[in-house]
Image (tube, rainbow, N blue to C red; front, top):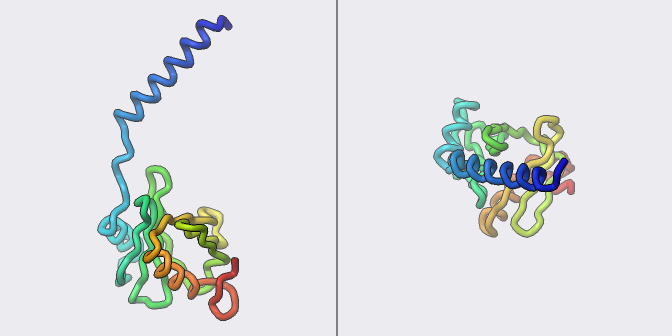
Length: 142
């Protein structure tokens, strides 16, 4: 292939990708209201306490006051939402690295979730997640 054709093709592809990115931006961000609404569509009998929204608006942790032995998590994967209900012992491990909470579960559909949180929200989230780990006594297994 001629180098001029190769460079012209590359430039055309980059321009087309830029146009597509500007014409179809990611406009659906997760908010507290949308996270609650989406989760309640999945688990209609849940009563959500004070939710925790990720800083990047791609995940939310929903503590449930009813039933009290469950924890809701809504994550945005591409243009889809995944709503999960964690039961006690569902979290195999979790770790905190600065502002990233990483939760691992025995689930092939989404075995690891990363949630970006501020300092205050991180402390609340850690206190919630500890109760759902498999480790003895509810301590962090990571």
